Each structure stands twice: as structure tokens, then as C-alpha cells.
Length: 382
Image (cartoon, rainbow, N blue to C red):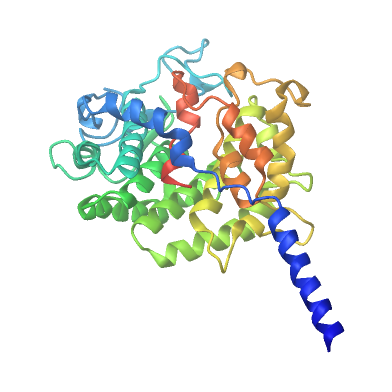
């Protein structure tokens, strides 16, 4: 008996020594503390900004009315052989003479409201929430300034189309706005607009056309439907897009090596690969639950978000090692602080990936970057 007690005492002491000398667990990454200075500086500036919606400007090339969002296809240009005729396509080359006011106003909303909501989340100062609400009410509630809840006239092409399904990608900038709305108080009237828009994009022929594309447009349709269905508690659409991510997006777009072949075919393969990866990551962040974690989903041959992130991270660390053609425009502007690095780094407990995210620029003044970099306030997400 005495020997047994001695052995028990020894084991207890040994376990205590191991516990005392074990390395402490690292603290979880505190996004709010890391980004606090940047968030508050931006939000403080935006407190002085007035709302500006689609009613502030119009184009005589739009077939819609005062409250209709209007944009033109980026890569469509006048035909030198037929100057007054239908435009022709120059993939990857943005036409600087297109009407872009509504898109810029929407991007402005998507920059300012999330920053204000992030500041409110960090400080709980009501002035930030109130200013965000001013913009949201102007865009989605006030009958004199609101935008109609559809994109009937988006991505028009002179002489060819008054609007197209591809235009639905213009509202990717509402994904982070929707996230902000979830966290702000008294937003029921604003949620009603998103319910109407979700109904339009899931039933209108343009929406169906966009849903059934094969590249980043399909990804962005799912991302938006996921975001807006979560905001409006539309369980049917949420279930639909969760299944579509597994059964359509991953097997249809992701190669076994983790690349996106449809994006690599474009004239901006690097930028488009980053863009699609971010949209996929946003879908996982929005839709994942403890019971159905999309970050861990993989096809039978191993294709999934883990593989996609593993493919792209080395080329974010060292862009010069990119083995595909250089983007024809804005090649120097990427990468940014891609949300796939933040979300994936957290999901897979990868401090190295989070560390890479921290080194990258969080903001840009270049319109093309703002247009394709749609999650800018990690405080709202992590």
C-alpha cells in the first residue's frame, strides 16, 4: 500500500511539473484591437459625409428611371469600324467613358457604412450607428432617394442590351453592408429592401442566368444570396446556396490542384483568382455552422477550400512566382489584405496565414481595386 501511495504521489507531482512548464496557449487573434486605429480614423472622417444614392446622378443611356441602378459593361468599347453601332468587347480592358456614377456611389456606401458599423461595434458610441443609419435609410427606405430593389439596368451594353444578368455582380458591395446591418440596431425597414432584392435575384431571368454561370459570377451570386438570406432569415434560400456551394461551385470551378481554371483563362488571371477565392471564403464564413462547416467540406478527390487556399498562398507571399500570365491591367495593385487569408487562417488555425494577412495593405484609392475588394472591415466578421 505504501509503495502504491508513493507511486501515486510521484505521478501527481510529475503531472503538476508538466503543467507548470508547458508553453502557454497563444491568445486568440483580437481583430478589434489589431484594426482599432484604422477603423476609428476612417469612421471619424465619415461622420461628416452626406448620403449619396442613385438619385444623385443619371445617364441618358439608361433605359430605367430615377431610382434604378445603372451601369455599363466594363470591357465593352465603341467599334472603330462602326463608331455609332453596337459596342465590341475587349476583355480585361475597362472603358473609361462608361457611366460609373451609381457604381461609385454604391462602393462609397460599402466603404462608409461598414466602417461606421465597425466603429460602433468597437466603441458602442451611438453617433457611429446613427450616421450609418442615415446612409442606409437614404439608400433603402426614403421614397425620394431609395434605390429600386433590382438590377434591371446593370451592366448594359450600348446597342446590345439595356441590362444583363452579369450586372448582379455589381451588388457584391452590399454583402459587407448586409453584415453591418445585422449588427446595427433598428434596421427592420432596411431588411425589407434586402428581402425584396433577394426575391428578385432568385426569380428574375437575369438572376437565374447569373446563378448558372460557370465562373466568379456564379460564386458572387451564391455569396450575395447567402448574405441576404441570412440577413432576412430566409432559411429556404440559405439551404439552397449551402447545397449549391458543395454540389456546383466546388466541383465545377476548383481544379484538383486548388486553382480556378475559369479565372486562369482570363486576361487578369491573378486578380480574378484572388477575387474568386475571397468570394468562396466569404460564402464559407457566412454559411458555416458547427453542424455543417463548409471550410472542411471536400469532394471525394480532395477539392475544397483548404486546397484552394493552399494553392494561392505561395503566390500571395511571392507574386513573382506566379506561373501564369501577368494581368493586363492593375497587376501592381494586388494582393490586398484578402479576406480569404483572414477567414482561412482562423478556420484552419494557421498563424502563418494570419501573419501574411497582417502584412498586406488594407485600403486602396484605386477604383478598380475597391470594386474587386469587397470585404474591408474584419471587425464585422471575425
